[in-house]
Amino acid sequence: MSKVGFQAFAAGMIVATSLLGGTYFLSDKQSASADIEKKEVSESEVESFLTSNGRISIPTDEYEELLAVKDKALKQPVEQPEKVEEKQEEVVKYTVKVTAGMSTYEISNVLEQNGIISDSFAFDQYLIKHDFHRKIQLGSFEVRKGMDFYQLAHILTD
Image (cartoon, rainbow, N blue to C red; front, side, top):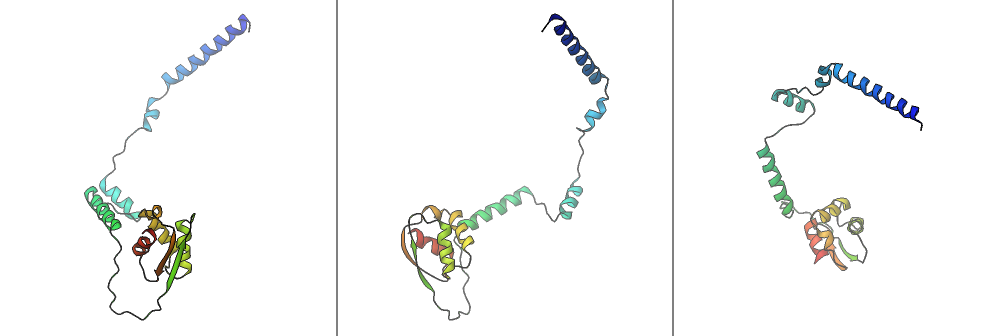
């Protein structure tokens, strides 16, 4: 690039910088600060917004208490309520054969197909949530209809 080219380039930079500087200093600063303006929201506005969207608000301590109760309930085995009147049902027994490479999904599907459980997805999620999926043993296990997820999981892991 020649000397004249450098001079033209420098003059262009000076003009551009001058225009940008002038625009910055002469512009209305209120329009830039209008976006930053803070708006105070009242508690009644929050309540009406939540109500209109089908939600509720609760205090933090009550929320933490509910979380603690939920965690405690998840850690306890599911207890079946006592049956007042038991009907004579056909006892369905099945021998599950767990082989190397079987996933909990496959085991759950086999149990559902043979009438032991009604929801394979729920049983699969139960095994994963309670870390039974890491403890499944290889072999044959006899199970029967009416066992809860906790009982089935312990049979498959012992």
